[in-house]
Image (cartoon, rainbow, N blue to C red; front, side, top):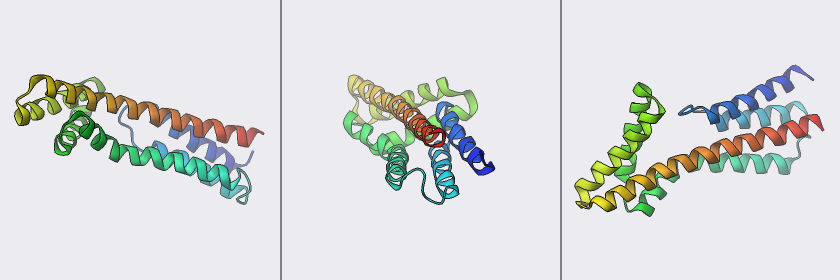
Length: 160
């Protein structure tokens, strides 16, 4: 195995690992960099262009879902986009200070308080908060699965 192949594998593994760690950015760019580096190293012959396109689209889907997901969750739950954005901001700040569990509590609490102030409806605010938190979990699961699929496909391409 060449140095570039080992570097590509390292990028792919780093992408998978960062997808598992909480609030660690860069999983898809790392994974896709591993794909492109190996593809370039083989003279654009392995993996096939079709596989590279599919893996790229999967990665772009995950990247887009990080921006679109909270907006969709807010709309589904009836919460405003501003509330979801504020929840995300508070969640990120709280994560940096107290960690992932507090981050979820911060997300839930922020959405709940802002929605309750807007609507005055206790049940509606609770539902909106739960939906936004569940979207956060779902997005994490998708990121982990896609980065592991990219890693598995590339390991199969390299080994076979």
